[in-house]
Length: 366
Ligand SMILES: NC(=O)c1ccc[n+]([C@@H]2O[C@H](COP(=O)([O-])OP(=O)(O)OC[C@H]3O[C@@H](n4cnc5c(N)ncnc54)[C@H](OP(=O)(O)O)[C@@H]3O)[C@@H](O)[C@H]2O)c1
Image (cartoon, rainbow, N blue to C red):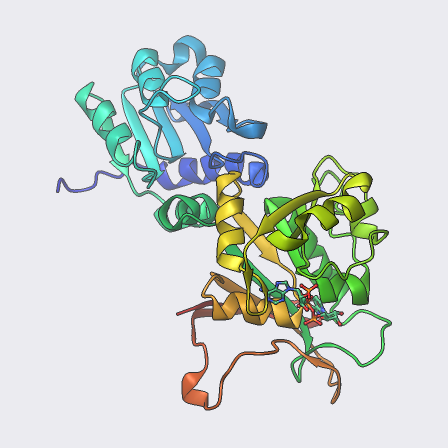
């Protein structure tokens, strides 16, 4: 492989491309959120990101803004430019036609019709191409899309807010476990994820809305997993006014009854095959991927979290540990058949940070 030729400013400009893409997370399904900046004589002349709904892509927009200044310029793109005719012409061709002389790419696109072909197309046209600048950050930004195309299911982030002794609910309702700062971070995640999912027990106990209550935020699709149709049809999540739907997921046998009970309020129904503990989560994840959703935030509760972990569907666990001790209440995870410590689910890449008075621990199940 040819040695990498990094130019001064490559990292700085790729950071700018990432900064363009980041606010579009959760808005570009089924496409990745991509940022592009065009640099001429060391100065940014255009910046753009994938538009809402996934089109137009970042590159043609940046090229349009740059106009004639694109000729001989360098384009920084956080994700490999596409090379296939989908609903839009290939972005690699647009870069070639614009006359850029160099393209710096954050990470390759694992999507089979593109993988490496965007790079090959650019190189064939005589353009100098650099791949892998801020690669880890670029991959992380689109970890949802990458998981969906490589594993045919969305990336799942499991969030748990617990006391220091591992309880996610006290015996009686009332009061928050974690701080306002931690809850605000969860709203930022809701803003960036395609869907938020909870189990029936959580809707019955907490009556959550599951929307994003940040200024300028956007609501994710809200998913309630309720095989036995135990949640009240008048629960807040079913009555919420939002541009994004609330979806009730149940087992095939209960689909008609679910439509009668929840459909009139505007709730969509997804029916999947049942499993021992309710709905078959693997099939549900596949159905979500088929809708183009790349990242799901699982917000509990204890039984649904256990089921997702047992099915090996969790990609990252995010535990908010509050400086409280309950000594009673619901454990964070209920129903994993761990008899010995050696059988526990192990996490890797553990990171810890303080969020207000709480600690946020994140790790990835092995
Ligand atoms: N602190 C936190 O972060 C946090 C977050 C959320 C919830 N909570 C607390 O957690 C409690 C609720 O948790 P929970 O464990 O009782 O209920 P849950 O996990 O929210 O829901 C469990 C229910 O989901 C349905 N389900 C369908 N398919 C399933 C599957 N494959 N696996 C597991 N469940 C499936 C089942 O109901 P059907 O029989 O209807 O199918 C099951 O009884 C509440 O007290 C709430 O306050 C805390």
